[in-house]
Image (cartoon, rainbow, N blue to C red; front, side):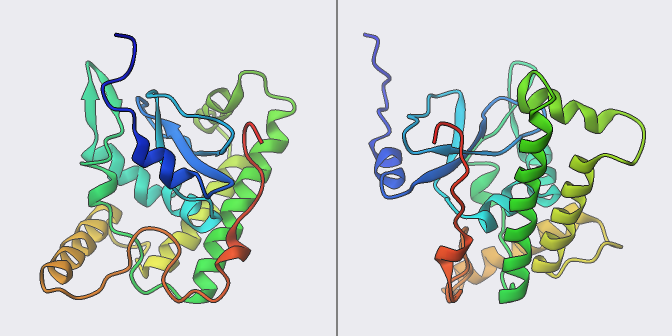
Length: 210
């Protein structure tokens, strides 16, 4: 009687060849993403993403994805809930990123985690407490600066304009990608773009539980 009705053997199989994977809390007002070691078996409280590369981590933690989450999320009682069906499955990834822009996103994502790890040495309470510092006044916040750098790299990978509404640009891309799929045209799926010359170079080793 204590077993889950859905054992998620598909998820376990997808994570098996990876050294780490991305996760965030499933019920959250604003998702904070992190890498978990494959030694950690995730529970139902976590939303899991079968990616082990910095580029994918950067796209997921960007304002583009968070903005999409804020508008497509479901709710558990009064709490926002990440839903793979309504959020992840409908979120379009960059379709024509250059090799340079992919590397830039990965580099910014890696730097973001380095900034967080350094800050956590003196901040007690984990990532959630650390991210509350973003609500404090003042511009000199290394975490805020790291996120701004990541967002700039992600916008460049998408080819989006900082002068246009971000959510509208994502929605327009969603429509365009959907039309391409309906027409049988190949699209860039989530993850490292097909044809990227050195996928292994985008994989880091820092993770929780590693």
